[in-house]
Image 1: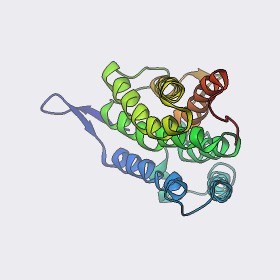
Image 2: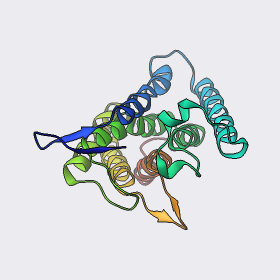
Image 3: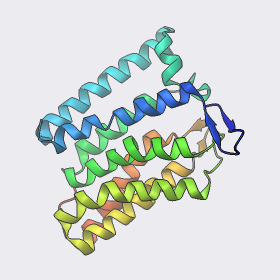
Length: 216
């Protein structure tokens, strides 16, 4: 992502970064398949497995075979050139929570990645791995995550437990989005960490409250 201060003092986002964010947000269509009743939960799991398989194949050709397609320039950043790219981690992490957690936990966690992360990305400026986002960006991420989780969790777990689980999930997702630690030279991408962090946080609250199932 290449961004910098504009003439008015705001943030200028590159066209390639904007395209990545739009592709990112388009993934909302995946959980929408289940929310709108087009597929059952089991069928949705199979859809996500297929998406992950395609992403894994693309990464195999990119990293192992050395294939260079123009689509990779749109989907990857510089620090992903020799690592598994964010778009693949995006698919893997959503697939993981869909296969493990109950729908009322996994769906909001997926939406936090497909909606919340692009919003915070567009509001934020370029940052290096290990550099946290600004507070206003984190606040926007938290607000979006809370907004997508409350309508799903409250009807299932009730106002108190559902609300608490939503807050916990939104906080966990915001922390995962706001800081990308580097472990052994590898950047822990928020595409990989947001859904599981949100799911574990919401699941822990629901398990303690005994308000709703946790596992799928």
